[in-house]
Image (cartoon, rainbow, N blue to C red; front, side, top):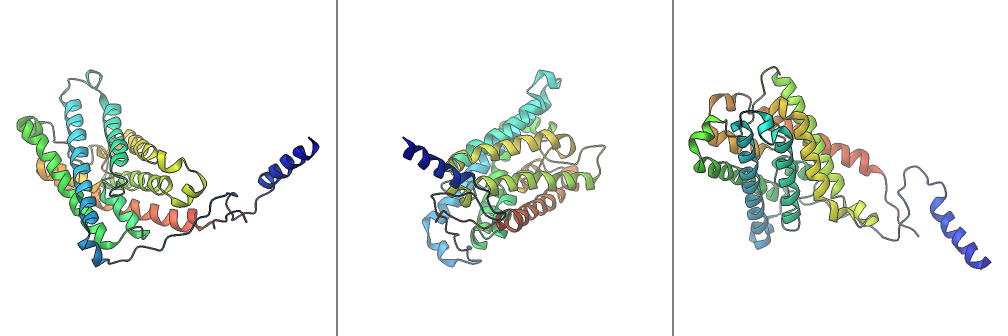
Length: 286
C-alpha cells in the first residue's frame, strides 16, 4: 500500500509542479504543426471534393439567409416586440442556424458560411487563395438565392418590411456602425479560431465535438449587442444577399460598412490568434 501511495504522489507531483511560463500543459498527445496552405493550388480545381465543399458553402448560406430573413420579417410584421420573438428571437435564429450549419458542413468545407471567416482563415494560411475565392463566391450566391426565395414567397411583404437588409440605424453614425461590425466580427472569428484550433484538439478531445456550439453562441451574443446599431451584419454575404434582393437606395448607402468592418475584424482576430495566442510553444510530455 505504501508503494502505491508513493506512485500516486509522484504522478500527482508531475502534473502539479510549477509550469514554466511559455509552455503548455503536459499531455500524452503529440502535436505536429501542419504546413501552411499554399497560396495557389491549381490541383484543387481537378478535385471533386473542392467543388463539393463549394456546393456545401452555397447550400449552407442559402439556408442561413432563408431562415434568418424570414425571422427578421416576422418580427417586423408583428404589431409589437412582445407579440413576436423580438430581438432575442432574431439573435437565436442567427446563432442557432450557424450552430446547426457549422455542425452539418464542418467536415465537408470547414463550415465557414461567411466571407469574413474565410478571409480570416486565409490570412492564417489555413486554406489556399483559390479555395477562399471560390468559397466567397459560393457564399454570396447562396445568400442571394436564399433572400430571393423569401421574396418569391411574399414579394410585397418583403419590400414593405425591409427584406432583412442591413443599414446603420437612426441615431448612430457610420463610424459607430463600422466599429460595431469590426468588434462583432472579431468576436466571431476569434471564437472560430479558438474552437477549431488543432493544438487544443491535441490536449482536449472534446474541443472538435463542441466547436459548433461556441461559434453559434458567439453569433447569438453579437446579435444581441449590435442589432440596435446595424441590424448586425458580421457576414458580408448575408448583407449582400439581402441588399441585392431588396435593392433600395438606403440599403446601399451604408453597404460598405458591412464589408469593410467584417474584413477588418477578421484580420485583427487572425493576427491576435496567430501572433499572440498561438505564439506559446506546444510541448508534449517526454
